[in-house]
Image (cartoon, rainbow, N blue to C red):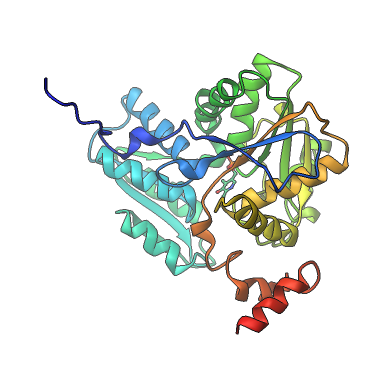
Length: 340
Ligand code: PMP
């Protein structure tokens, strides 16, 4: 009998079906059972693989795309990487418009994945460049993740059902960051259809407008100021966020989220990104508000991998520059002095 070779046909077949991993130490003082859905297990190391694949395949189903056509987006982060990866396998060109503030590492990473990167100077909006390129390029798709309903649909079709099946329907709370809002809105929509009592708890950043908008329906530009966590919160209201599906928002600080990110690595052996730390920090704050009890089964979405943050939260120099070692973790800072 011919031996079968067990192999995936290409890297895209590994997108989705990410594991739930029990959190054992970082939540040990909080009542309830906590599990992380670790999206770094996607082949592009983030949750954005799901939307890149879904949106591109939807365009294919609608007959909008043929091989050799072009996918366009404004992003230097996870979404760009995922789109570049999907484009390589499916034979599309990938054009990404990024701001000149993006780090060289990020731009090099996107170029390594075959993307054509337009670096836009500070006075030129990357969104406007992407829109123009889309209009000028025949046979192109503009992903436009903040304003694309398919971003929600991708998570309604994949992330939500996976969580429901993995928990045998026993999930009581979902805690997730909101950036475009696609992850939390899509998963929430599916889970609430199955059980409307599941609490959907959002995470927002200080410096972002989302929490206030959720509570008041008012866009308050006074809420906006610069902050460090990338991918969390926003300075506009994305239509890819279904605010009605979210029960509550909480805001987290850059500093506490940074320490929480490092805590996850050190205590759980899970090397995940800055927004995963934001989610853990939010869980601690939600616990203080009495959200959980011993029967709670809480699913936390950990959106991406720690390797993308080597020059940020996982750099002691960066932490020092931010002043993040000054108060909370003086002991850790001292250790660093000693090593130097
Ligand atoms: N974390 C990271 C690292 C991200 O890149 C994003 C996407 N902006 C999010 C969280 C938030 O996910 P979503 O856009 O689906 O709300």
